[in-house]
Image 1 (cartoon, rainbow, N blue to C red):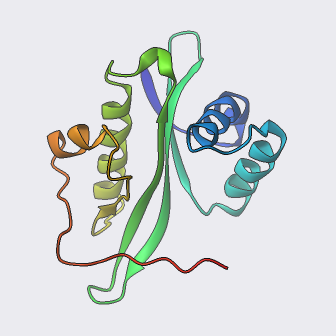
Image 2: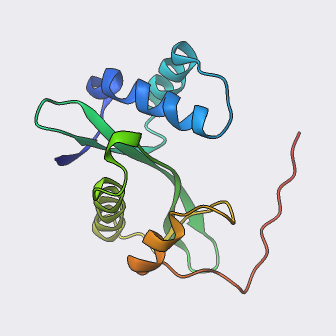
Length: 146
């Protein structure tokens, strides 16, 4: 397995993973819209995607980071918005490798931090804790939906 920073050239490897991620979160499968969404992210250069691939160049998983800023510290931060591994490779180190790649990228780019949000019952929280992520108990997150 190898972790790469994905580009538009990796679109075909990403589409089934991204679509699978959305289906996991109870969305309808829509590879056509997944293609459009990912293409736009690459064209606008407004996210960073890491892709895990096997020796046959098949996509195993991905994580997508969105840039943000902390006004208080006046530093860049990244939101680890998406992480997904195909069911065949779960609990085989793919998610951990993707998260480590995200951490190394954040360090190398001078980012203040990485932030993620997850469902209360998400079993991946064990991995997050293992990798040194801390649960924020000092703030509440609120969402307003249009």
